[in-house]
Image (cartoon, rainbow, N blue to C red):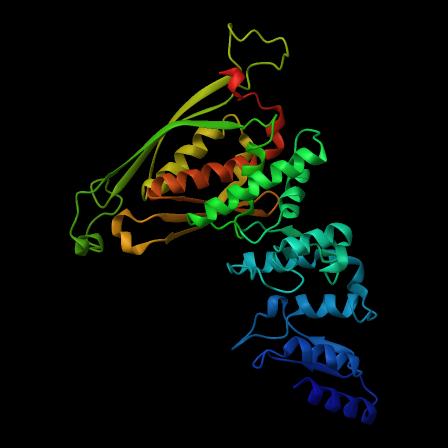
Length: 386
């Protein structure tokens, strides 16, 4: 326990004229606390691991110990100058080890500086440190405002001001925030959850913003599944050549997408009767299932006009049945997590539908549109252009 570590460390420091160190494990959930108390008691060396990775319940987490010593105890540490890189270091180690980052990790977790309650957000607008123990940028992290049925208008207002592409009055912002908040509450009553899918909220706000034009539009799609082996035992028969197209299920998706035409030069006096500033892409792709095939076809249709999507990949796909009593007619919630391998940013989208394929495609569309937000203001795919 920390009080025992304090007494032991003080006794050793007073008895021996050497640098005392501590190597703590997290069997009681006290590794970080014990390490910090030991330093306060005179220890000059702390051993630990990034993200607390280690045997059994793990070792002392340096991603918590180092910021705590540097920012709260003001210890004399050479790494203070590079402390803002500790969040990226934490995520790099997780990525290298193929581990999912702990969103609730102190200092470096994606939820470490997340705020949901309307009262919290309103207070932080006036005093940013009222609900934060440090400035998130000090450890390379960012503040997040979560949206849910518990949110107040201030949560939405903060999002609107961040993503709004026009100058609007405070009254208009407040009115729009209330409309979006009511929409969020309505959707959450149907099974949506926006706490872990902020990208979908951002897209919702942008779609409600005058002057915003989506970078692409899905015109139509279809998905088919072919399977000639309905006997489950045959699917695991290694004597078959699994590369043979006749073995196992095959999914094929077709999608038609309207995007900007990069061959048309930007001209405010463009005569739309001669050539429209958009182009339609029709793509077909096979996959392990209808959703996999749709994801591949959608990306192939978008990349010619939006090559930046080449670095975007799907890293998680979650499906949850919301009303199992409805059996095969149940509503399904789909959450998809994306990552841009170019800058290591991640985002999540959500959609709910009785058709799991439709829910998946809506989440996919939101995810790719979010990746293209910075290009959207110059897009011309508004109703006036087609």
